[in-house]
Image (cartoon, rainbow, N blue to C red; front, side, top):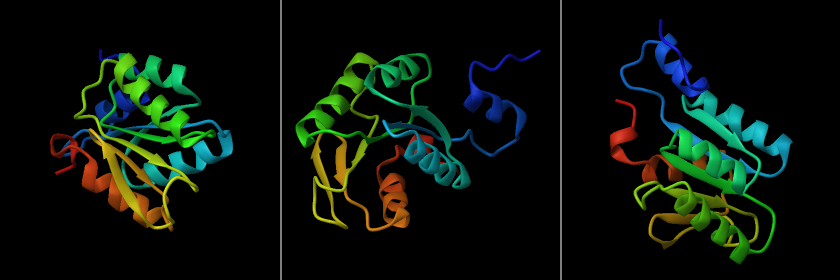
Length: 145
């Protein structure tokens, strides 16, 4: 009998696929926003690992490393970028794990910037733009075939 460690593993065991679902950790401090993002990413076939803050993200990423981390936290740009670095470092993730920070104030609307070692900041015009950035920065080894 197979025992799944979490929902993402359960989906990969129970639903035959050509490749396992790609895991995206969504770190968002507003529950309603986190739930909306989760639904949209689930529709695209991603397995979403929600976290409400930096500590929960670290805990979840240590036990089940994500393929990408998507962060939208309140606070100054320095605080959010620092949280992104800390999550990756404290969870023992490498720079190969991309981090996408989305914000309404850090960069001009519709733009995307890579600020350092696979950490990207965007202010998407719409979900399609965020979806495109996720596809571009997701490691090739975790892309669905």
